[in-house]
Each structure stands twice: as structure tokens, then as C-alpha cells.
Image 1 (cartoon, rainbow, N blue to C red):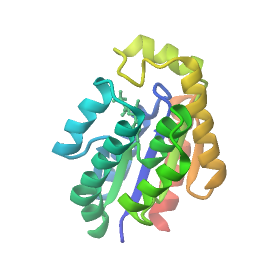
Image 2 (image 1 turned 180 degrees about the vertical axis):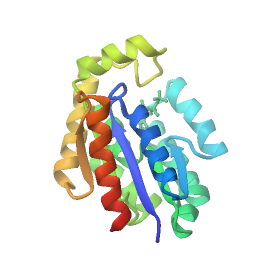
Image 3 (image 1 turned 120 degrees about the vertical axis):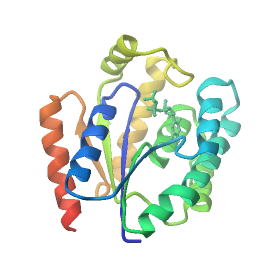
Image 4 (image 1 turned 45 degrees about the vertical axis):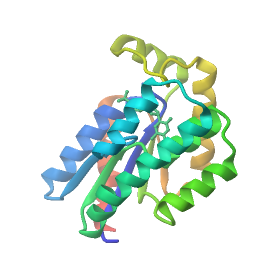
Length: 204
Ligand code: TYD
């Protein structure tokens, strides 16, 4: 596939939204076609599943399957066609979130996630993933200031410590793809790091 697939990850409140918007703007200003999207979501069906995932109580098994069902629809209808026509896909979260939240956070078995992952997206992986890393205490303060908590955001600090460890392990396992960004850095510092890396991806 000719396009580039870039994902943004991190615990809720790590600050990825600001940088996601700036990166999309930066790419578009350089003439690239960008599909800006998010998970769970990105299609009508997947957005409907997102509503259920974020607000309805359910078992871990159901949650895991709904996340991947949403992903499958999103891949088929939006992500894969965009990558095939050579566009950039910039996605707020992808399967690393499943490893971190359902896996490390909630305790879903790794073999099960791996199986669903290979069924739903075969060998397709993001070209680059930015992991916004920030202490769970800092993220919790930011969330408290800015919004009403959903089903994930109302979890306690220990949950977010496990999710963060999950991201750390993903990054250690795939350091070529996943770049850790210190989410406590200034907006300007982080922006410079991202733009430098995006420029590298543009020319690779
Ligand atoms: P997010 O898009 O960060 O929400 P907001 O719009 O509030 O910034 O994230 C949605 C939630 O979904 C987030 O708490 C993490 C969760 N999630 C999973 O648990 N597993 C997944 O595979 C994905 C993609 C998201």
C-alpha cells in the first residue's frame, strides 16, 4: 500500500488531541491528502459501537470483540481504501489501545488479542505510532478539569498505571514503529519533535 498510516496513543488525558490536530494541519499544508479518523469509530457503524463501548456496562469478552468489530468496519470502508490510493491516514488510537486497555488494563489474554488482531488486520500495522506518555496522576488532573468521564476514564489510577505499562511493553517490543513522546513537555517542544519525524516519514 502506498499511503502512510500514523496512529496516536496514550492514556486518557496524555495530551494527544492537540498534537493530532496540529500534525494533520501540518501534513495538509504540505499538500498531502489526509484521512483524519479515530477508534473506536470512523464509520457510521463503528461510531455506533463506540457509543456502546464508552457508555454501556459489558463483559471484557464483549468489549474486546466490539472493539475489533468496529475496527474491521473502519479498515474495510475507510483505512484500507485511503492507504491504497496513497493518502495518509492519521488515526486517534488503533490496536495498541486494545493491547494497553483490554490487555494490560483489564487482563485480556495476549493470545486472544493476537488472534483477533491477525484475523481483523492481517499483517497491516501503522507505519508510525506516537505514544504520548505521561504520569497517570497528571493525566487524571487534566481529565478532571476538562470533561465528564466515560466508562474508561472513570477507572482508577491503578488501571491507568497498568495501561501505561502496557504501552511501555508495546514500545519495547516494536521500537522502530512506536516513538515515545514525553507528554509533559511543552506544546512547542512536542510539536517540533513530531514535525521532524513526519518530515522523515514524508521522504521515506
Ligand atoms: P479517546 O478517543 O481518547 O476518547 P476522547 O474522545 O474522550 O478523547 O478514547 C476512547 C476510549 O476508548 C479510551 O478511553 C480508550 C478506549 N479504547 C479501548 O479501550 N480499546 C481500544 O482498542 C480503543 C481504540 C480505545
